[in-house]
Amino acid sequence: MNLRVEITGNRSVQEDLFEMLEKKKLSSHYTLITEALGNGNSGPRRGDAIWPEENFVVVIYCDKATAKEIRAIVDSVKEHFPDEGLKMFAVKTEVI
Image (tube, rainbow, N blue to C red; front, side, top):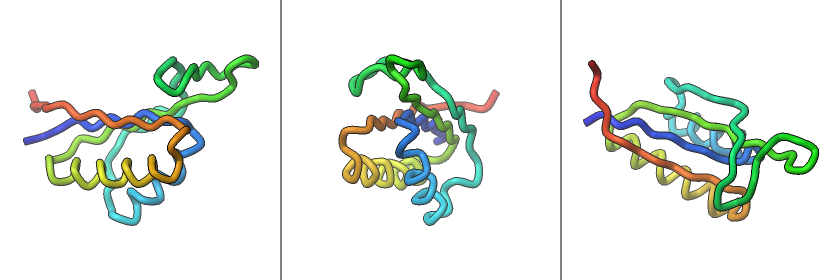
């Protein structure tokens, strides 16, 4: 089964996340959106003078076992930075 894993997080944790993904060799194929603006559970991220923070989004297509490894990494980063905002979602995909 193929999954689309989407991780959205505060840019302050992006480097930590990618370091851990690289250690486990899980970051070879991905799409990175470096500037994502929005409003979530951790508050607004608008990249302006009032709400200067920004998010990033990384998309990875992988199998279920790899998604579980990525989930463990996301959980570990969240433990170290509980207030920074980091979410992971996964949905089933099919190649058409």
